[in-house]
Length: 108
Image (cartoon, rainbow, N blue to C red):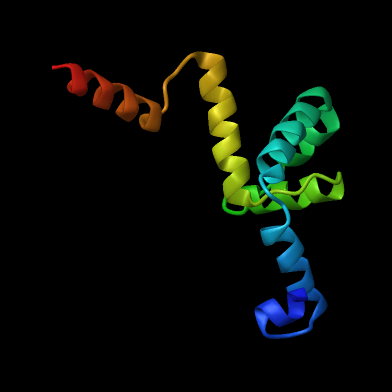
């Protein structure tokens, strides 16, 4: 089955979506992590990102990542950035806290 058949059309965009959604297989989070590392080392990229409109910054960051060969969605970038920052500050995520709280309740 081709991407066009899977999405009911044969457009280049549907082929792109098929490759992006179906074939990416978790690489997008890794790409977001790689892009964060690239930005941390590149003051010019940092300035460019700081100039983005806050209302669309994650979309613009995803586009900028794609320009560097690193593909991720705006939501994937936000989630990955939060995870990276939480790991650096030692904060526990709500999900992890819930699992810890659930584990504690199991022993009570």
